Length: 504
Picture 1 (cartoon, one colour):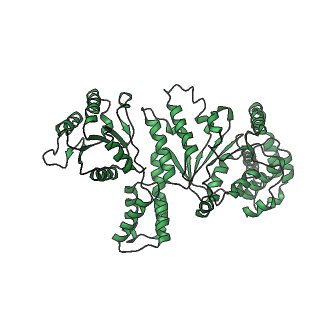
Picture 2: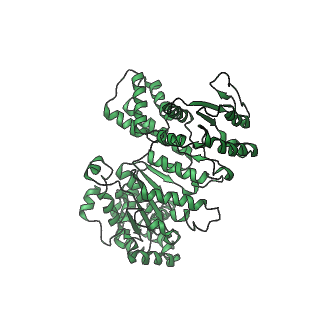
Picture 3: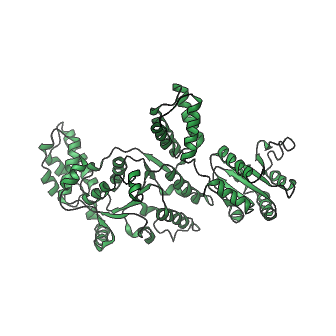
């Protein structure tokens, strides 16, 4: 159901107090006015703290710098006159006892009158005593149709024309931005070049990165890693390669649903985060990183609002990869946290979205401690697959050494005994192998020479791998995966020749 349809339903059902959190104040007010007109010319009154009520000359300035008076104005309008009262930034006054009490009184009164108070505000900040009388309605970011209409309008203003392909690419790049940001970045392009050009897509993407950074919830993560940069994890790579075209229109016509996501469980330093980056690069999709801790705010309703904002933004940017690193730490002990149920509500909203989402947002979550994850997270339907990423085998360690040394010393790779290095580093993770090479480089650099196989082995002898310091946790993960709770990400043998050809 669209915003206009849902808002109209609330008006017709006589919901007295409606709360719309959005940064797009102007666009929200236009949508409200359109709905009011559709319902038969309902009068719309707009108030803000600086100018009071605006529009009607008889009411101009009424309630200026007086939020209580702004509410009293509602009763001055005849009881049978259909009206909508838009109050801008009114969340700042809800903690005032007189304002709070007046809103409760009006909530009772307006149930029998065709009047509605609409609070338009940039954030959800509802005191606990008003949660029962205020109805929160989300205002979504512009959809494809709205974005296309706005770009077409701007293009027409420059007396130019764009091909359907360029227009579609611009529309896709603008998804996830507010209408005001779209206007601003395209106006900048027109001011610089006199018209909109195909290469303005990069300017739009930079605006998108800026917009995402300002939410302080998601990070737009640049990726350059390839699947071929991951040593080992053959089964996981094969699974990903088979789904490379699953976001295309051809896949939809074939009847395939959008891939849902992947949970990577395993020991630290085994390449789980690297895999998330490589998936985005291989599938040519934007990578958004979610720090779950940022979802939690101190105000009542703020955490739930941030969760909804995160979901809305990710879906607006779809198709995309949503990377959630160490999800086990975010939701550990969710039922026992002493936060009045906030963590449980955020978790509930998140896992319900995981199960029910239809948008092409591919979620890649990583976890080190499976015991800390709530059982609901592991239920079928949340993710397409759960993979266990264990310590690399000897063949995989040799592949990892080859990858790193091929990058560090591409011309001298043959000087290193890869087979010996792999044999002498049992229980080493990929991250520990990388750290070993860095230490070996320090040894060689300090003696004004290139580092050797012996330097690498000396560095390895000084590192105590995690597998020896966290044996119980690692054994539990291995037993858990062996019991059929997850698919193994690795095979003992090297990559098959078919996969190797696909990675070329």
